[in-house]
Image 1 (tube, rainbow over the protein chains, first blue to last red):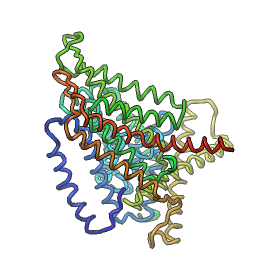
Image 2: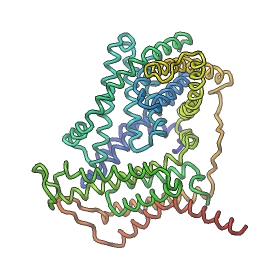
Image 3: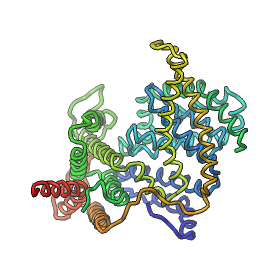
Image 4: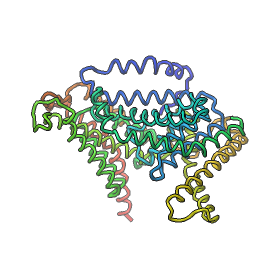
Length: 228
Length: 292
């Protein structure tokens, strides 16, 4: 990756990327052979969106303690994914986001995806997974107040985020396998993957039920004790 | 030239990502076949006969896609047979095979990439983009092994206290949860202690240095130059349109021409760079041993 030293160029890039470069790529996508470029363009878009998010975090003052806690939670969720039958990444991401804030939630989700894929297999799907889990964390952090107030709401969020995650990744599956994206093909991909999203959403629910107390209460305690 | 593994991470990343990008970007069976064969050759060169399961998955999955494509895809004119009043066309089968080939090639490239790029190398690359993120990432990797050891320690202690009943499913799950809960408490407190210690030692006050030093030498410069040149040649060839296949409604292959052959040759050389690096190193090693 190139190191951009000049502050000026970095600022220009930060504005140009979302408002000029990304729309330009989509609009200029050659019309004659669109299907060839679908996979590439969607991959590039995801990567750029991810880079923008991450570049934003570099500027924000996260605090050393919070940074370390993000790395701790990431390691815990990856450790969970390595155990047989366990898929607690979503649950741990949501819980971290609730107590450590939206930025930390995004980071825990996105980093868990990369790190666990070192074990489960890295692939072109990694950026999509990063974005999907990152967004689950981000939104959990934004709605932290109501989620902390009501367990029922938290469980509901777990179910919805499980379904949302599968739906987001189905977009990738469609683009990748068919080289194009139509509503019918997307529907086919969603239907053909059908038992899994439901199982995944239910497993999220179970993990949230199991972990809400041990992890949530401990994070709340750390937050209170050290005043994060 | 050093072996491909020992090259600068930036050069390795450039080679693999650009080759994989062209694979993703073009739907041209010849280039895809070249890409798949080179990636496979490099993978087998490094890992030998291991990972049979990966080979089966990487070849089998695309094959499945190829066979299934005609079921959704109704384009094409040459009907092979009819299922459920839907035509199963030869063109759709071929198109499915080409997309399957692409998937297999990309799977192999990414497998090579994750085998080559250790987290240390990734950290080196990430550092330029975001030192803070790189640190979090690096510490998470370290925490992973740390927590595993700690989990084992907690488990032993719990067993010693007689809190486990062996071979009982419910007790196993309950015990596992208790161990995890203890681990979380310990991990969080330990994290805070680490943070305090870092702050005490002046983290964030100056420029951070790195443990490993990856040098960017002449060989790396040559490799990056070759990668960029060959990529440019290949992309120019693809852009010229001489390599465009028509898949529907009838399959029409582009006529053989000099640009076609040149593009394929440039791409083959680009994809073969890792194999060449490794091969040359192996040859040198062999010669040195012979002369003893």
